[in-house]
Image (cartoon, rainbow, N blue to C red):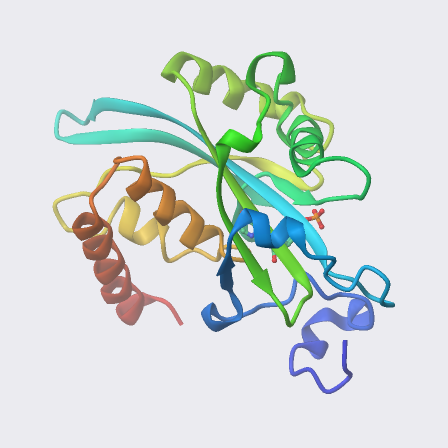
Length: 232
Ligand SMILES: O=c1[nH]cnc2c1ncn2[C@@H]1O[C@H](COP(=O)(O)OP(=O)(O)O)[C@@H](O)[C@H]1O
């Protein structure tokens, strides 16, 4: 990473090595097909070839009525990462096996996923992006489970190998909004998200028919109104 990067000061002694965790903007993400992402060599013989990373959303439809007023539309599992960002479990892949092999390995390590019951396959793939600036190919997966299974998966996370280190704990996305139009999903969206985790989340919420495009747009607008008043 060039010494002139304005974020060097934030990284301190890690500045010379840290690449993937640096902030990026929406324009950095170019959507590509799984086939294109997997079909090219992506500078395999260059000094610094592109790397692949895969992350996954596990969710269950809910419908529980909270405080006798608000319907929680789904239980969606995210994680609080060691770097203060919210993201989905997963990580950078090694060579020599399929993406799904490495994704499952990461999910086992980070959230203790029982692979005999819930292993991810190519069928669960949703989106791929390339970030040329970081030489990173991002792959996103999504799996719907029953509510009972989802709660079991959530419980197992604190027994995972990486609990307390890479992953500080499971986080549920609040899939409801208070009458003030802000508390719940809109304010949750004002958090810091790693990579394009927020976009992945919203994409899947619409794709899985948990919320409509219009409802998501409204949540984003109300998030901006909240941020304008409170977030510095
Ligand atoms: O949930 C996510 N959705 C989309 N991109 C993500 C997500 N989590 C991380 N990323 C991106 O992938 C990169 C590598 O992911 P991660 O930090 O989980 O891998 P690692 O723990 O193996 O280093 C991150 O720096 C970020 O750019």
